[in-house]
Image (cartoon, rainbow, N blue to C red):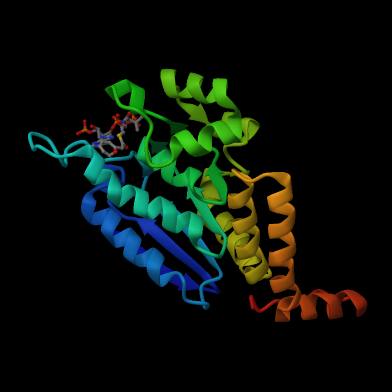
Amino acid sequence: TIVSQLEEGVLTLTLNRPDALNAITTELLVELSGELEKAQDPAVRVVMLTGTGRAFSVGQDLKEFQGGNVSFQSHLGHYNKVIKQLQHLEKPVLAAINGAAAGAGFSLTLACDLRLIADNAFLTPAFSRIGLVPDSGMSYFLPRIVGWNKAFDLMAFSPRISAEEAFEMGLADRIFPAADFQYDVSLFAVDLAHGPTLALGLTKQLLRRSASASLDDLLDYEAELQEIAGQSEDHAEGLQAFLEKRTPQFRGQ
Ligand code: LHQ
């Protein structure tokens, strides 16, 4: 249910249940978690999460537990593991939102570092429409991007948020035309994969800490991680390239 492809340092993980609009099953979550584990390989310098067909993902497959007696609390363990993996992976993670992202499908995109969206795609929280609360990290990420009241507004009314609206709210970082979406997001991802991956991974750690730390703590943590970045090959190369007035060739280490 996941197609995995590594090309030019970009690991593309494609949710591949197009007939079900990439609705999320337990099997899909377990597979995705396994692929994210493999993404720690240094050959992977960017991870890109996307979907096959007309949707990114419509969230939990509402048919999976029909009639069954399942504990949502324990089932969410599968989701939470993936959300933490996306956040803790020490390299950039992109969501390439090729179509609708609803419920936990929307949450998955929020746990990524950048969201690239096709101009005909939309986002919708969806949870309130079926009497559920936001999950899979949405209550953490959404208010941090759009503010508390806007987050509540979106969660309560679950509108369809167009690509343009998403961009205006900071929920999407780039909009690309649907016709060339795959091509455009690949170019973007490959470009990012040529970046100083080690430093970008450390940058993620700083942002994660920033969400809960005091200024004093964060200043210390910046200094600690700068010590590490300062000893990297990429810093030496970046400095050399600067002095020689050329483009640096980062190797991600
Ligand atoms: C679906 C789904 C779907 C199955 C569309 N499942 N079939 C929850 C519970 C427990 C623990 C863990 O956490 C979660 C997390 C969650 O993610 S809960 C939220 C689940 N997602 C939703 O509630 C979204 C439901 N879907 C929609 O609101 C719409 O389908 C959207 C707005 C996504 C797309 O609308 P349209 O483009 O108009 O498509 P559609 O509504 O016509 O759907 C097409 C087909 O896909 C349809 O089936 P059919 O047999 O009639 O063609 C839908 O039933 C099916 N489908 N989402 N999540």
